Image (cartoon, rainbow, N blue to C red; front, side, top):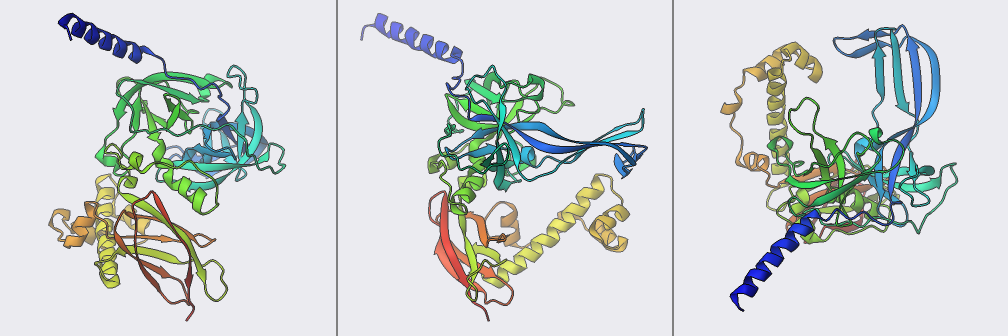
Length: 457
């Protein structure tokens, strides 16, 4: 190729790359999947309450002078299936009871949600310049506090008539680990400072957040897109695909420019697996390549979710059993000893941490319901001089030895273990024999073990 053509193609390529970086993030033609979520809330006003300003603690509410039930929008969500599954943040669903104390007039204002379901406000006419209307009620399908993720299911119209939607427009997931640095993200949601209409802001992908203080939960997507309370639980789009859930912003006390933090959409995998295996909903599947990506810091990079049901042979009904999964080269007794050793070590570390944060031995003793002398003995131990077993040391560095969980009231369990590893499975239930099985975990995102029968003595 002549040299002048080489220069032309080089110039042309650079120009295309520059233009591509200026192209705004795609805004979807249909914005109805991006909903506002709220709670039905009881708001109470009290006069002459007793309030400890130093401890910021209510001692007595005082005299109730006014009470009302109101609809209160609290965050955003995204419809992710045609039958009405909604992805949002755990903290949006689990709205904490809130209060405000006005010391000028000695009034206490409290806010408490009064039912399990959430209010779903949706744009019926697909007009982003209009306000969404209260259209549905949704109940939680699965909640994952660790990943601040919640999956809700639309089950009724706003007035309470049960429905089973099957034709809702939904957002498609996209790989959160295929983002290009400094390219555009679009944030869709209902921030409180944005009024009643959907707010769409745009910003750059600034990389992934890394912080060892948040072991297992570092890996946020960083952006300079404008976000504020109310955006929580909404949508972060990259080239029209849902890559994450806006969750947090820079704390006000931190110096420098504001920054937004987004959960990668793959952090919802546990809630989605529960929806699939426990409730038989159709869900969008995550390709294993997304989860095994080097940028994924979550346990799903190397682990697979195991699910199933425990039932009694006597009644064939669900059992409140405890499920333990261990590596195959350790006995049950070795795992029990390791668990006790880790519990003791963690207690020592916790007591020292609380003391370093300014709590006295007496305050720590009250927290643990122990004698002051016992706490003092723990504080006399030098953590640097503690000798722990090799298995405990490897466990603290992230190597898998065991995982334990308890079945829910339907006998369902979910637990993550390493992929492609021989696993020992134990199920413990009162008045039943210990169930022991051995299997290979496999190489997928999840594995369904079906119904496991535990026999009575």
